[in-house]
Length: 346
Image (tube, rainbow, N blue to C red; front, side, top):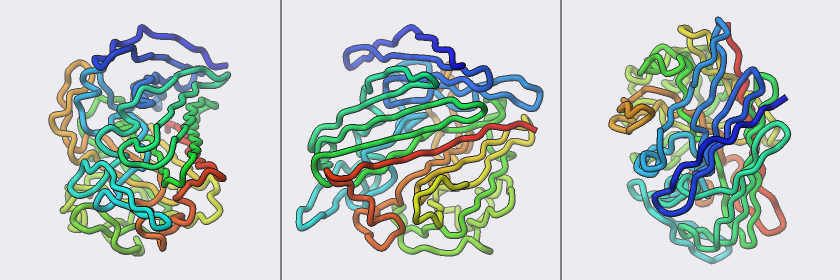
């Protein structure tokens, strides 16, 4: 049974109110905002059964709107990078919002992370909906998005559906920053990460994919559980100050497939991630420094880990990439993303 608590809304400095709701199934609990589909808090038990919040967040709307790191939000209309803020489909060229180097990142300067969503409840979670108008950040078509957060036992399901009335590339991801020590530590160095994916994307100097390479024997090889501290030690990760790389899953049927496991030896918590997406971006929170979080704490680099299932970056411009044939959603098709986060402790 899931219990719902409606929390006092926040005032949006841009106008209106930001709704807040907490859901709790007795094992894990979640606080969700109507701003950006944000997961503000996520409580899971450690090896002693003590529940602590394991994601980074803010205490007010102003801090969420000021920070630029997508704390807990849904990134869209297209997560990750589209090169040169441009794409073409059937002879029609589109210019997008450029907000990172030369790229359109996570949907542009006013992406889904900054939108006000409609918030409602389900029997086992919450449902958020958003309507993005034709031309929003340069993307074509009126786009309707449905986002469900559901609690089932020790699992959090994140499921997203999207449709559009003009062909448009869609890739949504949940951008929570996980610290499985329950925010008792300001570093991810002792967290371990194990990844099933056998290939990853190499990138140019602004994060645009250049090739698919094998992980085996490379600096991106995380086939066995490896401390996150390696991200400041391995040469291939130096240019990005740590992990900010997209792993590629061999998943042509878009099945719910295991990606890997993030774990903390300190708390005993571990999080196993399953997804139907062709790629998963692993980001070591390399550029958190200075971000204001809860209790006005100033975050530092490498304080958490993001695991972001998604379509592959720049797929609209690189049709040879896995999953790229499905990246342009047409009026006759529906975008579907489902990811399961399984929380255990030992």
